[in-house]
Length: 614
Picture 1 (cartoon, rainbow, N blue to C red):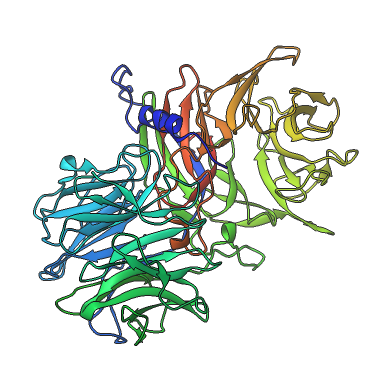
Picture 2: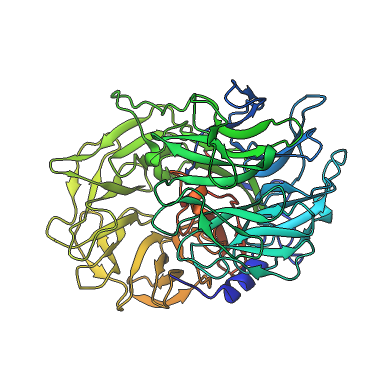
């Protein structure tokens, strides 16, 4: 899928993390509410410093959050890296000469990542999403200044995503990857250090990414997805003579980086383990730079001392355990139940706490104290918001079927969910089931239908359930009584209408639809006789907007969106590839005012909005 990035950029510019000047400040005691969402990301990456090839490394960071993408200053004293210890990715600095703890270098609610130094050490370039999508910024490097990012200049100002900048050895050029000419693929570009004279050097069907200059500036190395693999390539600095370094008999090679002695370092997967290697520029004299103790990614080298820094797993990555003893693979990624619950966002009329969890389809109960979820479509789980008392309450064992989209009744006495194939082809059967919070009294509400029925949500009085069904040929929004009777179709068109949610007053339903060519969020008014009015389009982004849910007072919607684009090259995120709609946004229904809630490179989705529970 391709989309109009010009329009997308315009929307991003008006969708910021700060209220407009016209918005009144929130009262002294603002509403405190919570958005809980699924976050799929790795666990506890730390930085490792190798003083010599193959020797045991020193672990430089021990924070339970993700630390990654480190680089040396040219004098070898400083390490700048990305850390998610405050929630969103920020740049931190570490003094290798004097020691001490890492210090925040760039203070921002947006993503900052992929730092790279100018050869003279006076400037730092990095990726930031502060203006809506991933772009390359440059700022002075003054380690004694708490935050010099106010002086940062946007060098790219492009509607696409720009990634992983690298200075040429003479300091005159910056090479980078960008998806500006492709959707979910990138090419290698160069530009002057002021952002001028942009030139594309590669053109292929897949990802060409992570450019790195040779130490003499004559060559640019990169990885490429061409030829059905991820391989290390090189080309002359003008883009000519592009060739695979090792030929086509090897694959899984990423993240090239200039190494001492004119060599080139890179990440290579061997026997399911990612290690760091280096080679001469022609592919000869292959040498392992890391060890075999763990996965390592994204090497950077200090040319004077021959030291290497990279990141890899740092701590316990076991998953939470269910009460019946089976391991929870939350959304397929083992790790602590809570990913992050530190972030808070100020809306004009309330404060939001953001809770990221590793389970799928999280749904807080009306009181905001218990959580429904799914262990990667296998069953329905209940727990506290922190994951305590995790218990499997429902699954479909015979035959084994996927279970997804669980929702509480408003009185907390019932749970509804969908049972059947996920992302199903036309003609697949998916049913709506209802059961008690302990799994008892389970009943199939759509047993008389062979249609694809999914995404149930209870009305505020629990008398009805709204859901999506293709029983009449197209996927439409339907109502039924909570016992499965009284079927009523609410929408009727040839597009896909799906993921419905009741408003707190029961007079409106929000849903996602591609009736205008791309998935957007719509609302549908219901009168007292349940007669639907005209559908109103709420979002206008040429990226998917999906999974809408109402705020407790019905004034806002929270949803997942791809309008911010990708924030990194997909091949650099092994196992944890971002989905096409991977960030959380909220929109005020009265005027369409939209705020981005999350900034990162991972998959964030299926949000729910609840009372705080305290």
